[in-house]
Amino acid sequence: MITKKNLNPNLLRAEYAVRGEIVQRAYELEKEGKKIIYCNIGNPQALKQKPITYVRQLLCLTEYPTLITDPIAKNSFPSDVIEKAKYVLSENPIGLGAYSQSEGMVFIRKAIAQFIKNRDGIESDPTRIIITDGASKAIQSVFTLLMKNSNSGFMTPIPQYPLYSATIELYGAKQIKYYLDEEKHWELNESELESSIKEAKKSGIEPVAIVVINPGNPTGAVLSKENIKMIINFARKHDISILADEVYQENIYSENNKFYSFAKIMNEMKITDVPLFSFHSTSKGFFGECGHRGGYAEIRNLPAEVYEEIVKLQSIGLCSNTAGQIVTYAMVNPPKENEESYDLYIKEKTAILKELKKKAEILAEEINKIKGMSLKSPQGAMYAFVRIDLPDEKGVNLKNMTEKEISEYEAKRDGEYCLRLLEETGICVVPGSGFGQKPHTYHFRMTFLPPLEDIKELVKKLKDFHLKYLKRFE
Image (cartoon, rainbow, N blue to C red):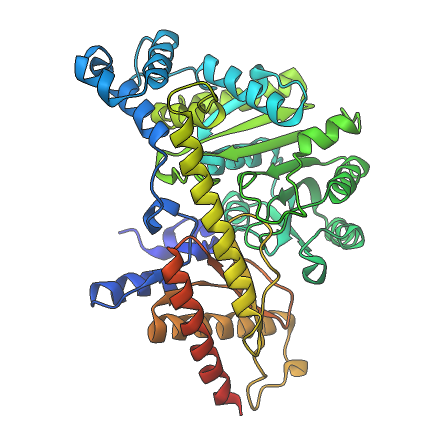
């Protein structure tokens, strides 16, 4: 009989906080009839964001081509969508029910390369693009490629999206943590990077890559061009690869910030000897097509013989799902200004991004009014990493505790806070310890995807709960 103790220890050690025990408790409470405001995960359409019409129309016609020749379809679908569906089927005549090439359909990879060229003003090679089941799958494939042995180290931001820490545990690699600078709106600090890599090497860890999430998850920060240049130079100095998680590139809310891709900045710097893996996804931005699992990796500065190995890895899984590939095509090849579906597309896109910006502003303004709570205003992405000040509990002396004991104690405290918040208010957030945070600080991550009215209700409930919670320490 298989028991838990017989399982892969790497799997047992891996944790994924955004779907952890607090979320399971939320499901239980919902079944009991309690209203839950889910702020734990970036899952837009589960939180009432409507799909983009253009995407669903293109999927409909490519999944069921018979509609294209149906006279009724001419009145139900814009002419440009019908023509685009015909083009997709001419490029992929075997249909979406068959496997595609392992790297993804050729015409879609060419469209991605054109998208990157349009975005950055630089050339992109479609033969160095792989379409995957969401960005997560692409990221895990690169981890597999770069991990030489159990001493291979991946530098990850703290706080970070737990896909990274969980994957490192699952694969039996080493995590090299570097702290983001909360006081400077969560930017990367060069001295912190140097310190973390130095300590890792002293411990016998061999650094192979640095992970950068821009815009940030869970921080909502947008990196400046100067910060990106520093990171590229750091990677070059230490001969490591860069994994650029850029899935929130459409989600920029501050007029003072702009998204710069690592590919664009690296091209400006004329650096060709730092391997770069850039990731994008259909799950975020304004598409929110999480369930269709569409995404891609663009790979630069990698020898052909090495690139062949990642193609081999992709071929072991045959190919990414074809519906997700079509959604990816829709993302990188939106309606043009002179096409019939353009006006509705722009209207829907603008409305989604405008509301996200408004909700981010409301959160920052209202949370910073709450005593014992603060928030660096989200500049991008879909999340707020809220700092909470919790006085020390009576009888607890951190000076007498080991680093591990302190970590466990503090994780227990923010976990208890978030569980109590859920039980009393129905607000489901994720403890900061699930993403990592500096010792002696407490946070929780929440998404601002719920409808505007829910966000307004949430802020009021949050204030009442937090002030009540703090009274226990008086």
